[in-house]
Image 1: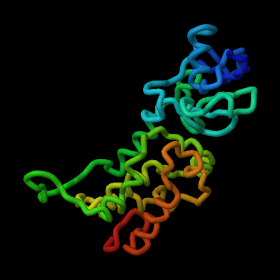
Image 2 (image 1 turned 180 degrees about the vertical axis):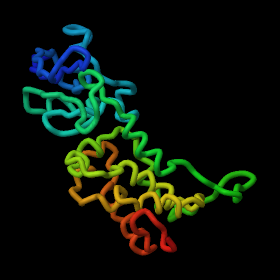
Image 3 (image 1 turned 120 degrees about the vertical axis):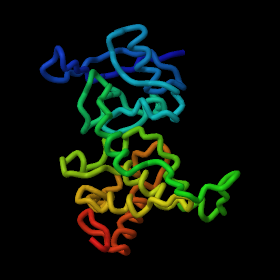
Image 4 (image 1 turned 60 degrees about the vertical axis):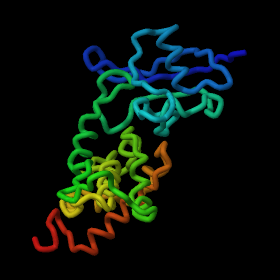
Length: 242
């Protein structure tokens, strides 16, 4: 038997609205329904104009990151029964709103691209495949779990304050490839992350770690990069010889 739950969704269409507005909906929700199911109910049964992102609905694609009762999370992973009603859903902070819960993530992806998030194997390409012992794999495995949902950036107090910062996701992507024994471009990435808005802009609030839907130890990885920068003498965006 489904119960009725109040959803309060922040609506905003820049083409028509001067300010965001909160709209209340009565949503029928079952015991196993998630916030995403509630949003689907609104769109399919109550208001087809509601805009939000969704894809896999299993916490893998990261497309449905929103703010739920004041905390960043994936709508497909938050059970309605675990939340205190009314359930207030809003768009991710720090990003321009395209419409309702859909934000422009291009600044996020641009920041990630800055750290060159791809493998640079150089000339050492084996005939069959790279072989890595478990210890070498473990050095960068945590970062491979990132689904680029932007939750960490939206929750970061440094970013929300407006301080120039490349963001936790970009630093984690840099960490992932810098620590990959197959990669030869770690020095370039370290120079990039030594920029004034790089890893050292992090102030260790740990919000990124708290909201990461994949359980990545984001703050720890950022601090590991900080230690690498200090050990290598990287300062102000320049390498040790700069």
